[in-house]
Length: 450
Image (cartoon, rainbow, N blue to C red; front, side, top):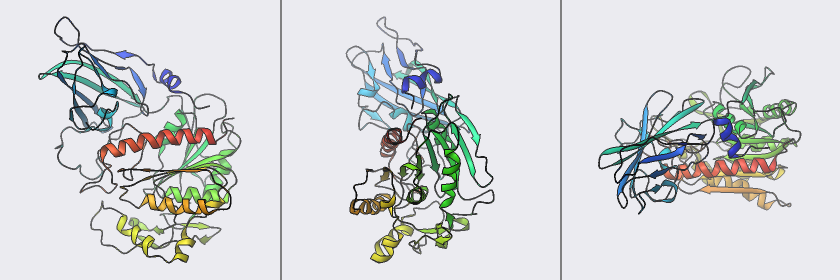
């Protein structure tokens, strides 16, 4: 059973109120009230009390990433007649986010404090959180004076999560088991074209009660393919077979959760195995494309094979993209638009053969590939199948390719002159929160728990 928020907060150190008082007026004591700690994927309440009524206060957040870089954000609020601000219920009147009330706006809108806020971030500047937790300090200011501060700890994963090796030499990755001794629903996560397993995400899923295997399917070490080229789909089947035999994994179907290029791999594997109980794709594709060779160059062959035979695919378009990082759309859109009906049909994953519910999350400003259209190709096949198939597709408006568990800063994942992922900070933050919550709920409903 997936633990509720209250149970996880007990493991994370409890839900309490941290108040650091400042100097107030009129006999009141200014304070910022936040939980002492909370899971990093859950929203928290932020309340300001004891300040002057009908005034304006600035609330600032600050944190440090794994490399020690300082990040921060700010927003201006109008205080009520009782001298309070409830961040989750109030629109800021100014600041980095102010289009709506958002309890976590001061978290996801943080940027490196020493960089010009008007300039796009350099390539690959993203907030990588310290593990297993990090602190965010919130300060309230009025008339240039700091009135109060409070610090809340964001817990990335339950300290009771156990990491175990995959065991067989031909399976590469790591499994993460929830705290406790009983069986838990099993999920296999498949990374994207970057080639790196998402261990952080796997730990977070394990913290929520899912036994999770983060599986590497190309790159080092041997015997994996060196690149995203002719990867055997049956490799995932072997991983499913090994994972199902673990004592801590519940009997029944295994969930497959693919990100980006891992999405079509999850869908293809689900067409071959009756041991799949659910399929999740984040910014995935229902269409198979050409693989990638060294340096991520087009490989002239399929990304995947089944029983040694290449899976039919669309060739990537020839495009002069310039130096990286660059958008990938010029590679992926022309083949989708120009392929013959027969070739496109052959390259589309036969998702109607998947005997499991499917959840797909795409992004309308995806700059890597056109994920909403690529999802629609799969859904058209599901809708055209003789039997009714259980699926859901969310196309997140204005969001980009870089989906990840919520409430971490989205700066560095957006659409601007130096990044290739797409989206705007607020749209990406909303997509992260919704996709994560719906994925957890979908997997909990679809997979056996014992």
